[in-house]
Image 1: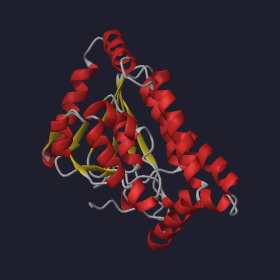
Image 2 (image 1 turned 90 degrees about the horizontal axis):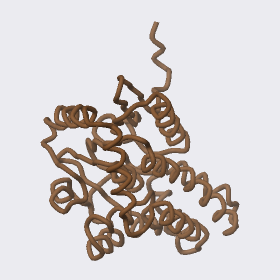
Image 3 (image 1 turned 90 degrees about the vertical axis):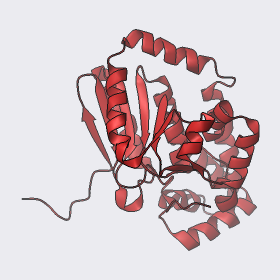
Image 4 (image 1 turned 135 degrees about the horizontal axis):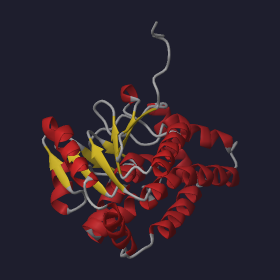
Length: 276
């Protein structure tokens, strides 16, 4: 008998001999990031590492890739501070550190991680998508960093670093400050992601891409990954530490607290990605 009241799994994990798949699985709320599903993603990557999986697909269920942080999680971090800036700093520093570990583990995974962006990738969801070794997207998808104008925070999960490396300083500055969405076609044309495909073709072409990568000599592919990552101007781990400190300081800032509380009061614990 099916238990119709049972909660769906936060992520779905699939595996074949050389490939694995992680699906963010809260499609009714557009797949937000939480402490629990981040931990489950990290566990899945660790299992794939142990099992010798070569290529991992990361995607979202339903019409979104990831809506960013679950605002209930953010609200909890604020409430734990009990009004003290020092405690908010410490709590947010710890919380972001947990999320950043997922980005680091994608970066160091001994194989190739492919993000298949099936819909909006907002906030931390954009950083997560861009952390992959190869990112592809549906034509209707977009990437958005609404942190500064809507939350009074900075983009996290490495987003600024990824944009800086791929599309340059001017565009990184504008997108990070203004939060204007980056549509998938522009993202592909500018080099932010590898490819943009028609929505109806995304899954087929993504499967073809993953199968093609899975046939490559693994050792050579991993060496290429290490060379690409090692050639970056700023080592990702160092950047993430700078990002973590800056974000935590903002959680202790009175102006930021006012912006955040206003946003949480208006939107509750659910984030709905919207352009503009």
